[in-house]
Length: 352
Image (cartoon, rainbow, N blue to C red; front, side, top):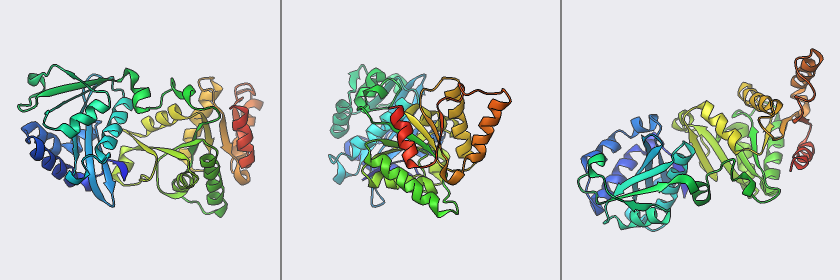
């Protein structure tokens, strides 16, 4: 079973599954139908739907949408009849909670009907508590329960990564953010080296954070970490999800509104940063890390994997900046060039 973010090809499954679920336990109210009909619009406005999928069959769905201020609504939790109680519903509900909290939610709210016992069980399991029902606000005739969840303790309950809980990870374990391209390149050494890097990350107890794609060098490093038993978090903007560029086998996939939010999230999650040989996107991403390290806004190693001299020109440029008095060795402290995997290991061990 895979937990994947919204894809338009599953839109009909989303509507059919929710309709069948509501008709089985409850009723389809006008506001339910409106939300299902407007699912694409709601996602464009910042919401998200997650699916539990197995062999292209949708087992369960859940939606979260901004409600007002820093309050988000949890809704449209539904499971196919034969998959009730299998964990599919819990998995998509948890994914929606994580998405909402990652996008600034301080409170999660929902309404339901007590007859929906499988759903109520999930809400209670994740720490939702009953509050007085405000029927006038929700505009739901048949709902008979309102529940909410305050996210102050979300980091410990649902495992959302934050700067506050990074220190709680076990010793010698890092989230390593790797920047690299979704293209393969024309040098066979690139794929071999990126697979070696991924295998080491996975087998060493560290975890990979990367851009979430299934293609090219990005897909190769993700696959190698997973095959070595490691965890992989992908961070992918919604417009790439709509084009189905994402890797569907990751430990966790975080969907962002745009590229800017993606970059910020990858920095937030990372304990160390590596730029593998890549294109202009990779250069932009590692340039921001270099700037933050130089300004002492980021206390983490910034490593450029100088495979076969790929970043020699950039190394010369940084030296040239020092020669011209536009930078200094002190400002560039924390920026490293690694010729091979052993160099990377030494750099990260030094900062462990």
